[in-house]
Image 1 (cartoon, helix red, strand yellow):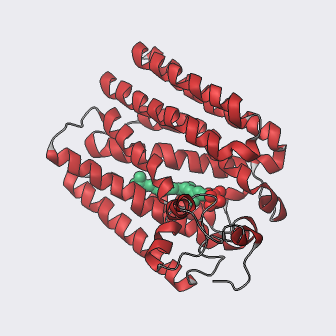
Image 2 (image 1 turned 45 degrees about the horizontal axis):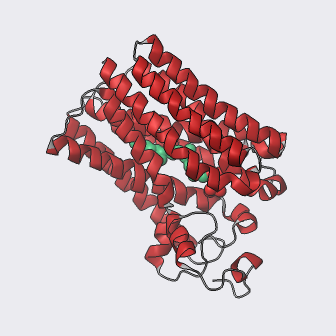
Length: 330
Ligand SMILES: C/C(=C\COP(=O)(O)OP(=O)(O)O)CCC[C@H](C)CCC[C@H](C)CCCC(C)C
């Protein structure tokens, strides 16, 4: 650990239990000073970010129409959740912190790598172990599901590749607000959805196109993440949307994407005669608009986390509604 505390760290010299929890989950505002290497490793894997990926698997299982509540299917689904959450999201988050260590030294110096809490070789070995475990488990799932074509393994390797080009030079997709956030939105919504669907059914072009369309709402969600680091991003030349368009315009782009593309998915559900599910999805957009108005649009810099915490449950519930509608339509 660094000898001279940063202003951020000195103001939190005595971590309370809330900031300790935030630290373990890999959230903004975490307490500094963790010494257990396993807790630091977990912090790098940002468990809070596993939730949407695990949820994507649930939605894919639902949309396949082939999931049943047998012990075998429950175990298969749980293994796929382990793959997409702890292993692959853990891999992508550790990799991201590895390549972002200079940026984080400006924006969030208390993070494990810039604070010196973990060494670079320890980080690299964590990345490689998580990746190898992820690919291994994906292959086991393919064998278990009796796949002739190893779809889950291909999705896992594809996801690992997107993670790499998202974070690492020379492409570093996250430097571009549109490309980076779409990669993020698609990887968080479409990829685990495809994995869950492929495990219990046949992945088809309709699911692929619809989830890629849905991922444009995910792009909006991903933009929310960019408001916490506007200054550092500007200094390092990262073209996030708040840097490109200014905070207010970027906030509007963000909420419009979230709302319009969910509404677009609802229209698709109507077109396949899943009217009840479409109505529920539209009803779930209303509280999101309310929280956008109450928190996010008024002060995106202050209220980004508060907005995500209040509105995201409705968005993710909407995803399950869509999965169930598609499974019902099979
Ligand atoms: C690292 C990611 C986001 C963090 O971005 P950023 O650096 O802007 O934010 P922080 O400042 O908070 O660090 C996520 C990147 C996601 C990536 C593009 C792809 C993820 C792939 C999946 C994990 C693969 C899942 C495959 C599975 C379902 C078979």
